[in-house]
Image (cartoon, rainbow, N blue to C red):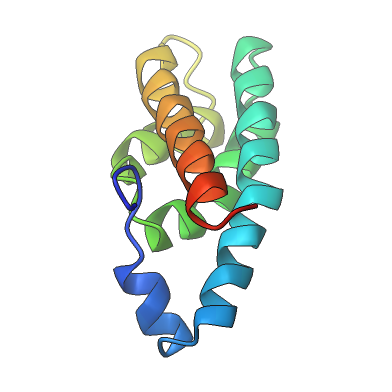
Length: 113
């Protein structure tokens, strides 16, 4: 448990209410993988607007669950926000996508979702 994510800040937010922690974990599973796929597609298609939107939406949850990739996500977000046509954010994107996949699988197992 909690190898690819941390619940410290989630528990702090939830006031150690286990039902609320589980609800936040379920919300993570419903939203973050979808946003990560949107981000992946947007970067591949050089769709700066949607890359920015997806990364920006993911930031609070990635930070709350402490996936350890916030700085990489910000690089991808800024790539989209500032339309950095001459830059490649694929390395940071891969780090983010891997972290999301690992956390998703672990949360599914840990919370039986």
